[in-house]
Amino acid sequence: MRCFNVFLDGNESDLEMGYNHGERYIYFYIIHGRHEVNSKAKNWADMPVTVKAGEVIYLKQEVEVGVMIARNSLKVLSDVEGRYLVKDAVLGTIAKESK
Image (cartoon, rainbow, N blue to C red; front, side, top):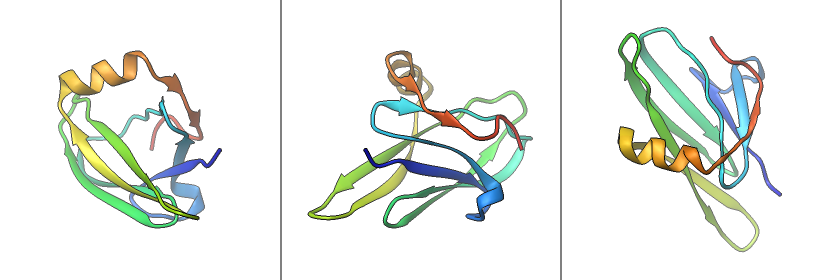
């Protein structure tokens, strides 16, 4: 099964926060302010986010499988949709819990 790596504020290996597969999630804590979440499949998907202190943001990796490659994109979810999807998902692999 293909894994999709998630990075914060760049795509260097030391910025990797974790990875997941379908029907999985990861989480991490960040300080408030502007950040960019980066997701790696065959392509790079980038999502700028501005986080307020104490705020929870849910992002979804959407994967499109082609003949030989998987491409991904990132989508911001509402709080209700994010909580709903996470409750039935399995925890992915967390490399770092905070940055």
